[in-house]
Amino acid sequence: MSIADLRKDYSRASLTETDVLPHPVDQFAKWFDEALAAQVPEANAMTLATVNAEGRPSARIVLIKEFDRRGFTWFTNYASRKGNELAQRPHAALLFYWIELERQVRIEGRVERISAAESDAYFHSRPLPSRIGALASQQSRSVADRTVLEAQVAAAEEQYGDHPPRPEHWGGYRLVPDYLEFWQGRPSRLHDRIVYRLQPDGSWQRERLQP
Image (tube, rainbow, N blue to C red; front, top):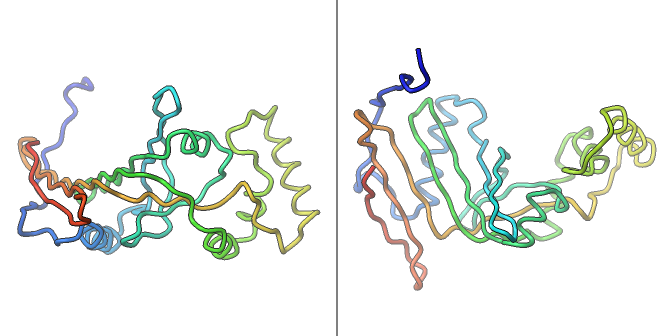
């Protein structure tokens, strides 16, 4: 079978303008809870897309750790490639893909760092090996081989023991959305797409897009 012949018809559900909630974050919470209830593997995994100063895009999978009406939060190394790109261009796009439910959610907006207190609270809730790893790894920089990385981890363990501090180069980002799209797969590629756009007065405008 050729790649061109690979296809699946989607028929699990539908999405109408009357199905969705007035606020897009409430709608996201509803779908997220349904993904958890359906035991979608790593329902909190999302694609994060950024661009550099020249407009060159890059994307990777990260894990969302919090969301509310302020926005969508994840944690990373501020000196990583994505951190450097966000410093140059503080806008990004997120994509959740829950294939078991035949659903996608696209989110776009500006990105800001969360407060040091918020980053501290999350950092100290993480398992000890993850905290040590955040201190030891110079994310996105080249390394000769894995033994060098393991040596950095061992050095951090020796230096900090069971009480590693949050490094200044590590913390949270929050994407403050101005666009959300809820996509429900439908037969014959006639998918349902409901979009929310933030208006100047702070309200959200909803509309259907053609598939």
